[in-house]
Structures are given as structure tokens and as C-alpha cells.
Image 1 (cartoon, rainbow, N blue to C red):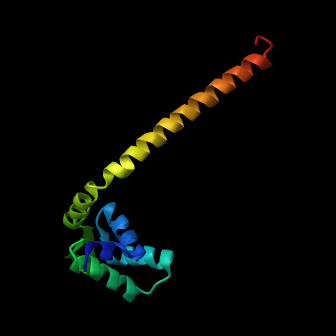
Image 2: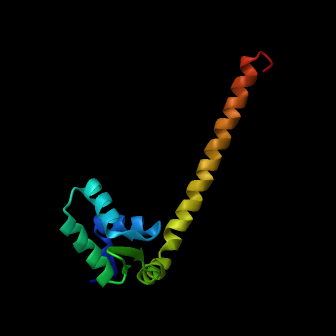
Image 3: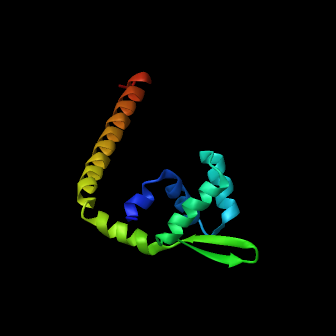
Length: 122
């Protein structure tokens, strides 16, 4: 399965978000996913298996619990693939930041003018 096929599913993306905060038991993951997506425990287990089988997550036994964690390798590969596209949104984000700063300056200037005219000194 291609990395983007794995990440194309919102349930698997959410599981990775949960695991990004640190190692979690399968029960913890299942409880959150069942609450948020309304799917069965076997369905959550299947999503965990897809993540594990494709290298996005690892699992280890701790007594009777199974603890899952994010594996960075496949995510680094995606990050490298995305690198060639960052220029497209980087320039746009820089332009947006410029426009937001300009709008903030204009609002600030307009507020100062209004306050000056309201107190009778303008």
C-alpha cells in the first residue's frame, strides 16, 4: 500500500495524531476512535494493523497491553516527497503574512485616528 493510501483515511490519520503525543495502548486508541468515528473495535484494530504493516506504527507488548507508537521513517519519506512542493505554499504563506501585517497596521492606524478625534484633540 502506498504511503498516501495509508494516510488517505481519516481514521488512520487520527490514530497517528494520537500516537504523535506518545505511546498509547490499543485500548486507549480504540476508545478515542470509537467515540470520534463510531466504528467497532475490530475496525479500529484493522486500521492499527494497516499502520503497523506499512511501517507507520510499531507495537510492543507490556504485560497484557499492546502499546503503539509512531514510526518516523515513512513520515520522513512523505516529508521528502513534499519538499519539492513547499515553494508553492511557502510563497503564498509569506504573501498572506504580509497582507495580514498590512491589515493590522491599517486597523491600528484607523483606531488611533478615531481615538484622537473622539477625545476632541484631533
